[in-house]
Length: 399
Ligand SMILES: Nc1nc2c(c(=O)[nH]1)N[C@H]1C(S)=C(S)[C@@H](COP(=O)(O)O)O[C@H]1N2
Ligand SMILES: [Mo]
Image (cartoon, rainbow, N blue to C red; front, side, top):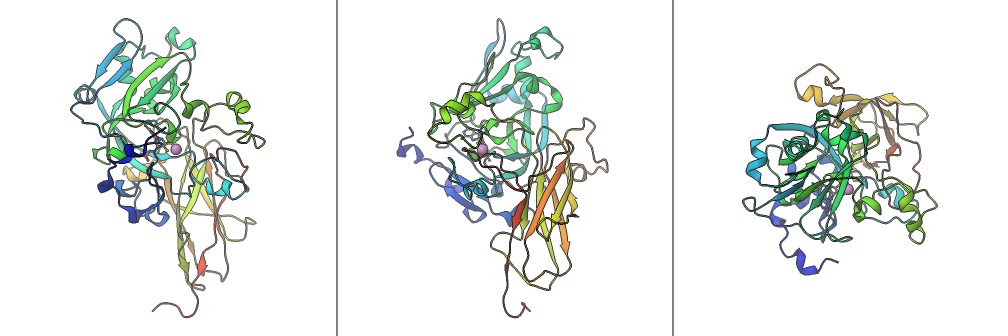
């Protein structure tokens, strides 16, 4: 349990509350206002959502240490920011999405266990730091994925400084093989959008695991550890799983061990404009805009919009993607991996007097979003077709 005094030192100066819908203050949980998400391909830091399971630790960069538990003799080492800075530096533009994004759609069906979220817990940032693979390689972990070492399933656990609400500390893990593949760009990130991480985002160092749900992007790193089984932390074993709809608060203990910890994001999209509180002018043109993303490095291949309840779907224009942002006309990065979201727009020539705008995306795995959501106890991974029914401005149109 976290004592209330633990929240006495929160970084309120770094939080532009006007940009957010604040869902809880202790811990600080705030999603981005939808209309602020589509102005730029890379989400400005002051608009990036914040998701915390406890108070924000106040760590001195000069004093911070992270322990690396690698393999064999000399496999345990303590690293400081200077050690990370001496390794080759990389940048990746990657979308961070909370597995609880759009939980409100499941809550509307039946109560769920978790913070309410609309579609504002996804943001696209430019992350910088060194590769976790290089940190582990220096701690004795074989970097050749054909090494017999990889014949056995292994995991890397990430654990955080600071307290958390459900366990002694925040921790989780992902498969080692994923981390050691350089194409996957798993970083020990120290920078976000060109600046040192804010405290809210994990200063001085966090995991960036592109294509994987936000819960694995552990902030305020205390140690990284190679081990034979996944993390036993609450957030790995008893949270962030899609339980079957028969599981509930009374019987969930029976179901947690039977279902795997979530890893890759699923195909997702949302309308950001019109925002939920925005009024449209009937009969006038309007350009709807939004984002779409997928997990595991899969590309968003198309985004579709329906104004007739899903009877017909028209193609939206993808107006920003990673290739365009990098000044390239190739739609695939050479490795075929996609870590960013795309932004899309859809021109409506004349806004009908009553309309629901629906969107859905398709990814390179041929996946699309289901017409209706299936409820799950933890309220995770809701990616049903996104619908917004805007308010219509009454009376005369604005001059
Ligand atoms: N130490 C720590 N790391 C954490 C969390 C946390 O509560 N504590 N929350 C996780 C979850 S669930 C998400 S979605 C992302 C959110 O990252 P952000 O706050 O930088 O947007 O951080 C992850 N890393
Ligand atoms: Mo999350």
